[in-house]
Image (cartoon, rainbow, N blue to C red):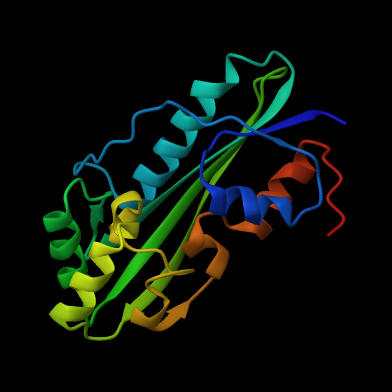
Length: 192
């Protein structure tokens, strides 16, 4: 079986990919994430995923590399990871009581052939109206500082969510069904 590399240090992506039951290695990408307001959040998610995969690919002459990145967007504007608690509070205040999009872009590439497949999955998340105390308590936990849009749906912010539409795994960080289908294109037998 071909060597498969997940170009991400995210424990959530590792856990989701692990559900496929295929062996893979985790090699965190050192690609620098960026927010470019000139491109759509969907395009941004795809560009970042490609960049992350390429930053790891050169180290492996014959492997399948999986890169992914998640972008939270409100009213068409991408929100990155907060760099200060104040930014996290501002982001959560913006998301409070509103519906936003979560785009996860992914790339699967063969370093041997140069072939790659990229796609983006969009899900929608609606937050209930959050109180200042709820936001402050969550930000004090430190969790928002490593998350696009300053929250993690699968843990501390799960109670903020009124509803979601689309792929839950996508919101967490990896649209598993789409990734599985892409791996099949590269001859990776994924029976689950």
